[in-house]
Length: 347
Image (tube, rainbow, N blue to C red; front, side, top):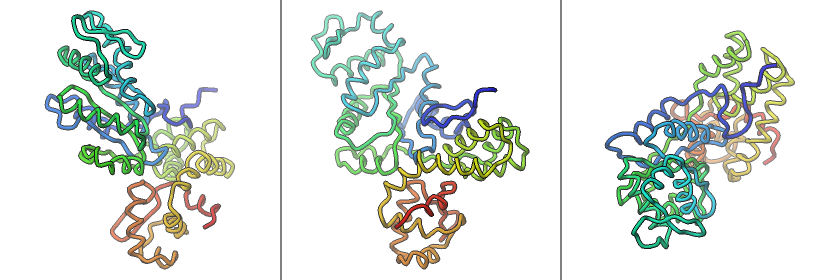
């Protein structure tokens, strides 16, 4: 049997990836332009919406360009030191440094610029490295997946802002949940993040999902479209449903697959999303009894929550990516079969 083209592993680029062409082109063209106005982009969206895959795809494309050096230091301790180490260890950069007799000594690693004083701080080290790369017309992209509000992240952002003011060719692409990005932005020392453009991932195009199902599952156009609609364009749901059906050699949906589909969504995504909601947000979502748009007034009547209060939480839930407004005064849940999931929870 052929390998399953669908993947249920988070962050791994699947064989049947539906490219987010608009978002990819926007970021790459902005970073690659001769007169760049944005050096930072933040990709936000729900868990399972494809943030990591998009970040990896952009990093991969830029890595193919000889003028780009792409590093992924991770969002944990000593981010700056990891950036310096990753830059040095990148084959493109290492060849330049060796050729230019670049070396320094820092935290057990031996590197130094010929004729210069020893480097004593990571900030000084990065300035020397970036200055050298700038002279060689190289650009550096730092990618950080799932940023948080940690002290390490704040320290890194402050240092990055300082380096950016010196006009080094240093670019930053990050992903994060809406709530984590918001907490980081609230820090008064990181106000420049408010100006950083954000790309909130929308659902995948249903037509592209249907086409993929028709190709890989050999389903009819009608069935493929119904399967695509079932996912609501949610990236993880698209992969899970395809994975289950391909693995069982099915062309049509069965109750067994639908049950497994619900179970995977609950275990790997929905439980976590639900647990991170406030009590009031949970109560509002429990007001949706059918998978259809609801008037705010109707939702208020069902939940016994004042419509003004719902409006406050509505904005939060929309920014999180859980709700959207298909038309003025109406709200709908974005996640596939989330209403079925809510039936298993108690308020």
